[in-house]
Image (cartoon, rainbow, N blue to C red):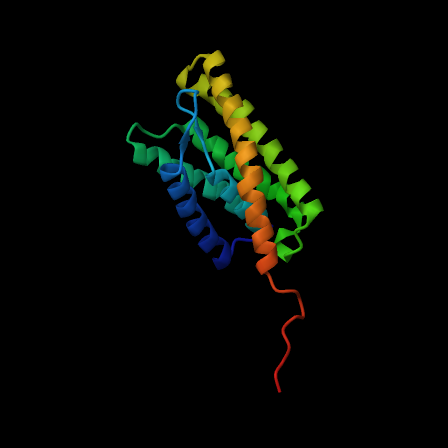
Length: 183
């Protein structure tokens, strides 16, 4: 879970790039200003559960940073930090899913979705709004509404996209001992 090896570094690079592409080009507008319905958090949760908290943190940090940078209005650090925290928490709690062993079933899906719901609530209902107020002096009522809508929409999209990715991954992992030596 805490190992940083070549596989993890490659996963961070690929994960951040995919997070950026999904967040930049597949963002669905919401009725709340400056809030989009995002599917990239499903990918982030899957990668964090598979590769651990450090990978999850860095994928969220780098990916969200690149999204904000590409829009041209500057980096909104409170939300970048919230994305990093989301990835970290899912990576910490995600080891209970047994995803890395290809053993993702009903219990794994429940654990995965509990982890992502807790992480989204903390990131978007607590961290992002509080940092918006502290860093940018944003009005509290505005940022807590934005955070609440973000948390709810992210929990739903992550439950769909992330769970599907986890089941697909577990299905693709060969069973241990399934390979036989040919004569």
